[in-house]
Length: 141
Image (cartoon, rainbow, N blue to C red; front, side, top):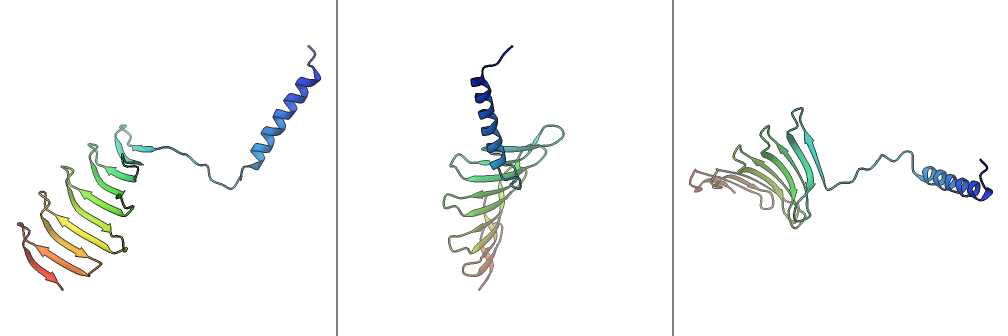
């Protein structure tokens, strides 16, 4: 079977384009994987961590217990400020670490009903300790 010279020219051109494209990629650059959600699963196939984008379009990372409940989350709020949340077995936020717009940190621990028990404000700075009813029992300054 005889191949026409035009076909050889076409195939050689395709090969040249492919070689130029492959050669133009930086061999030192790490490969990039793009997706809107990644799930880390354990040996039993249970989701243990999720890296994704929230419904509002903000990136978020959550780590889950063996029953699939999110227990630790790192999120950005609507102002792009980071928040680290720790949740109990009922998925109630019990501890929160966040930064405000000035970059000052705030740490708070709360009861199941969200009654504050201990708060530290970096912007003031101040600290407050409360009883089970949320009444301040100590503060500084």
